[in-house]
Image (cartoon, rainbow, N blue to C red):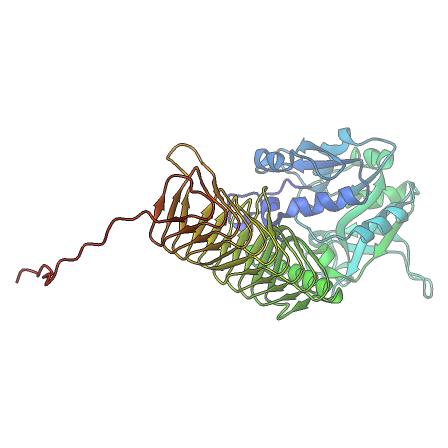
Length: 460
């Protein structure tokens, strides 16, 4: 269900498209559904339907995504009524909320198992303060066995005695589609809110003699919904702490798990160390013994064994990806852009930017430099302040720098150009023609001095 407006978010963006851990809330929920083997994912849209449907149009996992519009929004039962024509009679329907992103796979598998093809299974939890939630009403307990579920009563419709019940319905259920469709057709809106409650199917099931069972969990994060920026921030931090703990259980050493952000997937080999305030986006893998300094942002990158990423480095792989070879030293304050492919023992120092370039083993660019659209050979030393001028105003061109080349400081290599292996480019040179292997090439004007030069003075 993803039709709500989310008024308290105070945003033009539909609530279910707000992001947690770098992904839309709805994408979390749909992804979990796909991973438990859903044949189809039916998204009920309403507010911001065009945006929501566009965001999910690419599908999720191996499941097809289809959409049902709920206009106007007349309650949870009305929402599921809109989806009913898209539900196959031979399946089990799992009802999920698009703003409850952390529901677990194993929890849903257990709920489907509890439904067993012929029961209505509810996911429930006990809260010390259940205000606002639908209460699970059971028959009287029989010794140590809890009574059967008879109804779910919404808070506004509950009596004082019912409000004292601490077990609440989470909003998640599993039910055979053929049974659910029949109950949906019998819903009415005779209640305090004038809405069609999905929870009324519980009393309809009980009246029809269909067993209603509850799968009770204790992990409140799995059923936590988001209605405000504050709730989103709180759940983001809880989610991140959960990711951090999982990594530490694998042996990753985090300097402070409360200052860690994972907004994608992170694979770590042994003895990885990550300092504070690092952000990982997309798909990132860290090899054996990799060390990540403080305040780094790393997206879509493979960093191989023994590499060190010094503080304040920004690696943005996007679709082209970035590779950092084994034993390389990057940063501080370095920037690796899409297509940067670095071999073993490469050094990229402070305020160096690399884009769509390959650097072979042992190449070094240690200070204040730019390498764009370049192929750099082994053991190249690329001087401070040097750049590849790769753009002519209309097209990009490539620079090739052979093995063992030394490029002096403050040079401009005007692409397309090839610097022959073993060559040297004198500092301050602008090179717009290819050079021979082993040659010293200097391209700068002769220095001119004017003795006793007087600087201009300001007029008084």
